[in-house]
Amino acid sequence: MTDAGSLPPFFVLTGGPGAGKTTLVEALAQAGVATVAEAGRAVIRDETARGGRALPWLDPLAFAGAMLARDVAAYEAMRGAVAPVVFDRGIPDIAGYLRLEGLDPPQALRAAMRRHRYRPRVFICPPWREIYTADSERRQSFEVARRTYRAMVEVYGELGHELLEVPRAPVAARVRFVRERIGSAAGLRGQSNEV
Image (tube, rainbow, N blue to C red; front, side, top):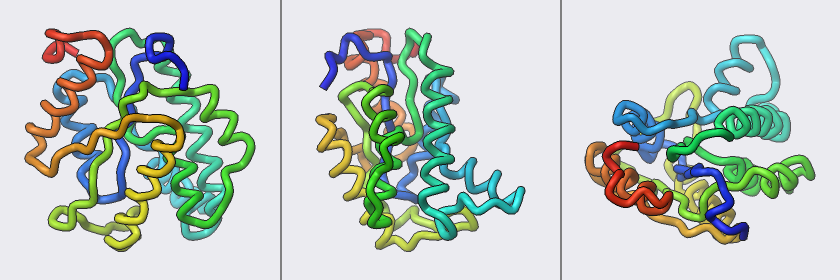
């Protein structure tokens, strides 16, 4: 793993679908933390609107490729950031998705994971049945959400990341949990309320 001090202050928030991840990212943004939205939902919306096939239920590899393009562009757009940035899913999430689909990551994804590194500390939201809901973009069952969580644990663990499980708690407590830990991980001890 690359020395953390040489990496940009980029932190990933991952987990299975329906675990409160996006709500937490939105709350972090409202609290003044720089954030990057998840690529998957944006790809689904765009592909559905244009009648495209890069959708998880039609063409998983094309869907992965579309997410990768968005994730790399978002990473590059934030490259000059000096304060912590929280990404709603990182590039390795795509490898976890493909693993669930029984597909190997293409070379472009492997190369992107080597070139676009995040801080070692990765936040992971565990499956949370009480808040889980499906919708037009999230079609997975709760069991698939649990399998997705396990895939993310495996992928990020294999890449040498330290996984911090976000507590199942009210959003404000989750925001505090993440902010305190990104502050200390980014060398911002004592400034976590100002990120």
